[in-house]
Image (cartoon, rainbow, N blue to C red; front, side, top):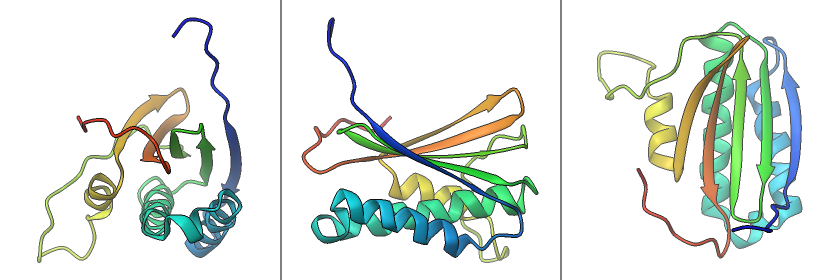
Length: 141
């Protein structure tokens, strides 16, 4: 796609360790409302908000870190990224009736169209992507 450019809009929020995950959901919901998704794609909004909850909870609980939440909409996909200070990369675990927790990345894997985690110089970033209204459907890998 030579000569093409990507137009994107994004928002960022820092959520200290002592902040409520609800604040992250409310903040994300406000931006999804501004995009018009709360009325046109409520089921995607629910999936995005649950993903925000899980990723911010993981940053607070497992990394013992402030969560840097970034949402980017590039007219094709909504990218939900959370950066924390832990270098340990997440992986989905099979659900268990023996554990109370441990289902966060399993849920993210089920809800998002794609997700990835990558190390950064001062921790890691986990990004989940959700196709937007009218976006071309691509196979998951």
